[in-house]
Length: 64
Picture 1 (cartoon, rainbow, N blue to C red):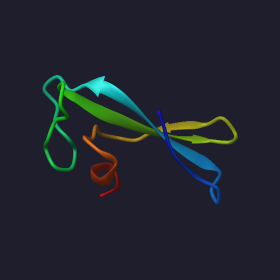
Picture 2 (picture 1 turned 90 degrees about the vertical axis):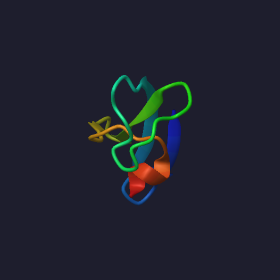
Picture 3 (picture 1 turned 180 degrees about the vertical axis):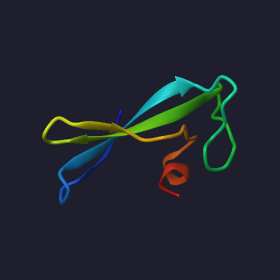
């Protein structure tokens, strides 16, 4: 899912819902309802994709 765009760096932030399994949020230790977490990635206008390390329950936890 598309989250936001940074026009200065020409990149977009996306996230994908994944099953949490035995994992918890990389920042606060919580798990979303339905036992899900988010995997974030950055996509550039040039077509490059960078997967962010860790799983998070929300964007504020990811940003922290």
